[in-house]
Length: 152
Image 1 (cartoon, rainbow, N blue to C red):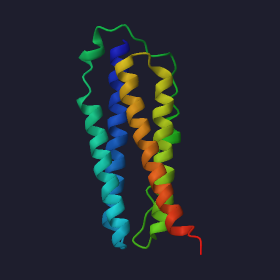
Image 2: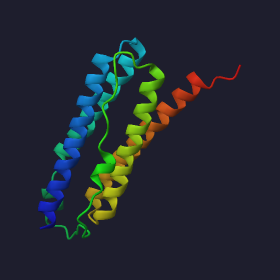
Image 3: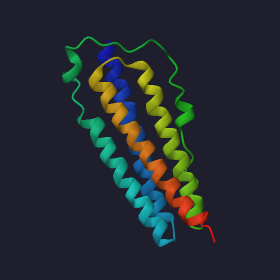
Image 4: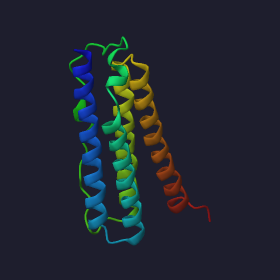
């Protein structure tokens, strides 16, 4: 039962990463600004790498381990569904703000997932990806601050 649930949750995480990849790829093709295109393509590639980590996670590694998925029916997934409103006229600033918010939501998703698992390998995978999402957000925030809040 726990492994079936774990498989469902990992499949959901793979879908979130696939959606994020598609979002960033579409936004990169939509954006006119070259630096925005480059930024978005970079995030698309990162999402592919994250998706592969989930896809390559070996459930057999935890099959014999005693672990549980804490009971709950609501993952609050609606909190993590993201709008896709980037237009050809979106500025780098608009895109960076959107990316920051998106990365925060994905980090919150992973953080929430940690509440449901006791398996060390699963927790390690989720913690690693959560840390990467937070790192991405901080990177964008730092660039945003450097670009838009320059001291004169």
